[in-house]
Image (cartoon, rainbow, N blue to C red; front, side, top):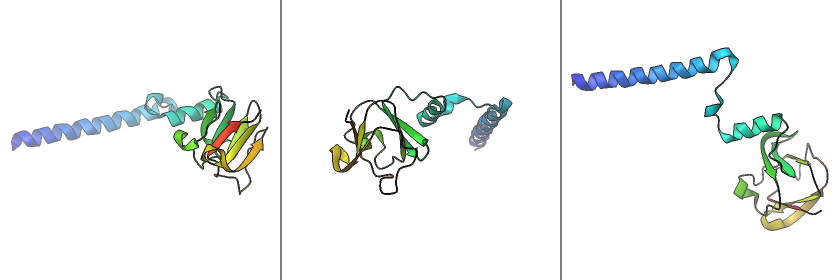
Length: 135
């Protein structure tokens, strides 16, 4: 019984020490340790710095190029494979003309674009499931 109590107390002390260490690390000079951030946050940082991974098109989750970003280098017949199905609200085009379709494998209604779209019309917002290069 006494041994169990001591082990439980040591575990609680170790947990409290770990929490206080993380809190102190977050407050150090207002900077955070980037090693604990997930890939999604890294993509956001790349977007702020102007580096989108060399894609010909970059799809964004929110209007005005906000939220998660997905660089596209070629035809993508099914955006759900990228976890971006029906989530496109804005995009940047660096090269060419692109066609975005409302269903996977370029089915349904499709719209062509050759310039950036910071805000999509309501009927097209969060509707795209595939994208391909036209020219």
